Image (cartoon, rainbow, N blue to C red; front, side, top):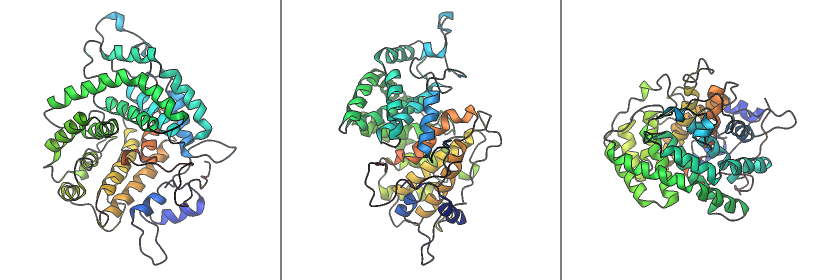
Length: 415
């Protein structure tokens, strides 16, 4: 599924961003065909000794920032002068990568790649970094911060969703066998007190939420609800699953004609329309979802084209708000894939959804190489979520996973 960049393949791919034609001239629009050729973006890793996978670069970005305290943007309610503290003293685990939520999904990125064996050469370094940060004392410090007065809405819902993605990852790893499973369980046990605080807050907040939050940034409810559901299923938390599913149906079951042409807004990193659809495919049956999608996004083409949804443009990657559009390309890619995989096999919209996903994903991956910290501190996590098919809830192909003879490691050309 993870086809690496090489010159001839890229040249053929660029002829048509949405497909590779077979010998009979017909477009290969099958879901399997798409995922076999999905990633052809140039390798962003800077390694003059040998070609490296993008995952190596993404892991390095996260390792370099999870303990990088400054620059830092904190969202901090202070109740007295005593609470004027540096970030590491406020939240002793998740203080790096510019802000709390980016630190959380930076740790998730490392856990994801370590757990699925994507970067075995970096396993020892990643495990050491996670062990250093996932200590009982540091987690107790995080819990104490959450319990502080005036912080009931801290990082709600975006950061909370990513934290549950982190613990969901650890739960899946710990359900396996071997040393990694054992280590993941140790870290999960240490994180459980904070997980309990966060799940309690979600279960208290969601029933009170009168309306969906239809933004393209952190406060959006659809994206967070999707990750809440994924965590609930992995955790066998039927209460959370029912709560989120019911609220999602209440908010969105009757939604029609989402104005996708209005997107993206100038600072979006999440598509309100596509994230809603990506949420609803989690709570509706295949047939129900196909019917709902027809009413919600009626203009999805059936010709396999990729250009029906324009890629977001960033004119200044050093601007922390404008660079959000690099993220919208990546999050659109994973949402489009999720939508496509939830449709019936014969649905004629699948090819265009996957073609647009590839166009956006390739554009988004290129942005991860930005030298500007405004984007680099978080974009690698988005690229990893897309590249490893996290939202699709299926095992990614890695070096140690059989894949019916398909190559995992066609080498990427180094930039």
